[in-house]
Structure formats: C-alpha cells, structure tokens
Length: 406
View 1 (cartoon, rainbow, N blue to C red):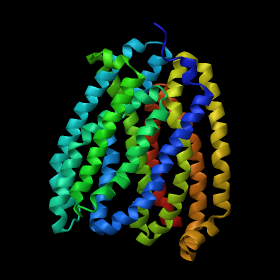
View 2: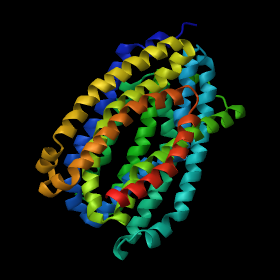
View 3: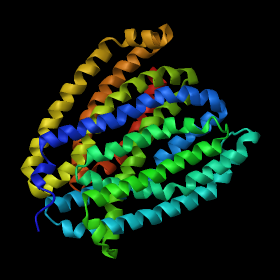
View 4: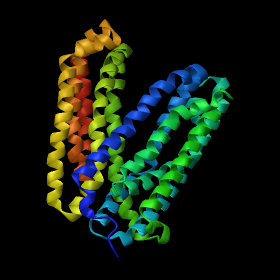
C-alpha cells in the first residue's frame, strides 16, 4: 500500500510556514470580530448578563482541561506513527483516545452540574433576578463538556497530519460564531439562556466538522475501529504531565495581579494590567509557530532527528527576528505608547512596568520552542517539574519584591 503521508513533506519548511500563517489568521481574525461584536452585546445584555457571558467564555476555554492533556498527547503519538509509517495502528489509538476523552468529558459535565447551583447561589455575586437563567446557562455549559473534550482529540489528529489549513477553516468560523452568532438571539430575547444555547450549538457543530475532517484526511478511521486497554495508561501519563503544565502556567500568569491588589492597591493592578495586556499579544507569533512545530518535531524525531535540529535552529532565528524589533520599539517608546492609549497617569505609572514585561515576554517567546520540543520528545515531565520548582520561588520573590519596590 502506498504511503498516504510522505513523512518528509510533514516537516518541510514551506508547509510549516504556510501552516504558521494559517494559525496567525485563526487567532487574529476572531480577535477582530470580538472587538466589533462586544459593544452591541454589552448594550443589549447589560453589564450583569455580559459579565456572566464573559464567565461562560472563560469556562468553555478551560473545559479543555478535562481532557487531562490527552488531546495533545494524541497529536504526539499520531505524528510519531506517521513518522515511522505505522498508519495502520492509528485507528485503534485514535478511537481508544476519543472514547477516553468522551468518558472524561461526561465526568467533567457531571462535576460541573453538581457545583452549578452552589456557584450561582453562593460563590458568584449574581443578582437574584438573574439566578434562574444563570443556573440554566451553567447546566447547558455542563452538558457541552463532552463535545469540547472529544473535539480536542479530533483536533489533535488533524494537527498530527499538519492539516492546519483545514483546522483553521473550521476554527475561524467557530470562533466568529462564538461572538457574532450571539447577536442572532438578541432581536428575540434578552435572556442569557438562548445566548448560551447558541454557544453550545456552535460547539456541537464544531465537533461534527472536526469529525468529518478527520474522516476525510484519514479514511482509515472510517473503515477500521478498535479499542485497546493497554493504550490508556501511557496516554494518561503523557497527557497528565502536559496538563500539569497547562494548570501551572495560568497560575503564574495571573497570580501577580492578585498579589499586587492585596499588597498595594487595586489601582496598582490597573497600572500593571494595561502594559501586561500589550506585551502578551506578542506571544501570538511564537504560539502560532509552536502549534505547527509540535507535531513536526514528533514526526522528525521519529524519522530524522537531524532534521529536528535544523528546524529548531531556523525557528529560533525567525522568532528572534520577528519579536525583537517589536519588543525594542515597545521598550523605547513605552511612555508615548501608554500616553496615546490611556493617558498621562498610565504613562507615568506603567512605563517601567511595560519595559520590564516586554523583556520578560521576549524571553518567554524564545522559551516556547524548547518547551514544545521537550513535549514532542515524550518528556513533558521536564518542563512540568521545572514549573513545580519555579512556582514557590516565583511566589516568594514576587511577594518580597512587590513589598520592597512596589
């Protein structure tokens, strides 16, 4: 049988460059739609309902944690199979992973259903008149969790095949629908329930689109179905370390703001958050690249490790050349940038913050490449263990330095 996945092509520079552009489009276009869609949503729903909708967006984003990293682990393992011409073993791996993801999604949904009432009536300060529709909205979100976890696995299969063009042709309409599609409900109702229902319908449509895409790109999945219990533990072990990194990273990203608010003042958080929001946008560039490189590294490590060295060396240079000028300009014109955007107060209090954060995000952009390489090499435990060591040192240093220097 002729190999349907020429391995050399899966790591070719031209393909990886095209896929990176598609990833950038898949990130930037929905951001632009969000900027246009949010003002009418705020006006129509009101601040309280829009606040709940914002929580719903966050919750849907974090539902992927219920897959315990199996979606990303599946990307690595399928890419390895493609690299070693073991395509016939992929259907068993894929269907076992997808069934496991479905079970995890059901468990996550049941857990969310169990805590929804407590969140609405106790944990969140929701006006009494909004609590019934808020509770129903959380129930709808809980029911949708299995679609999110299974979709992460299907997306992993497509990423392993370097099908980022197809992925983003699905992702862009889905992301746009998550914002603009909600406007469709506004002429008929101001309740949050139909708005959340539209979000859930969008997730189901996304699941079906990813499933059909997998059937199209890998016909073996349609014609071969199998489950293997021995696959489950390696998947959970590999994915668990990846998921631990996914849990620790947001803690270190957002903890500083809570500590600044508790140790200094809430206004200081504002002066810190505005520069932070500027510099974090720089990470879009390495994020688009590493999304493509992760399966490429896994394939090349199985096929030709020397090719991995070449890919890493080139991409480090490209990321440096792309990000460094932006960081340099940001640091050089920090006062002017903040003055034009937010006024004198932010320019005076946030300029030095912007400069330090710009330097930090530059280092972080370069660090994403070896991070992706370690995970694709089957050693996600190394970055996770480093983060476990880093977290207490980071917290202690943050508390001491904030108290000493503000």
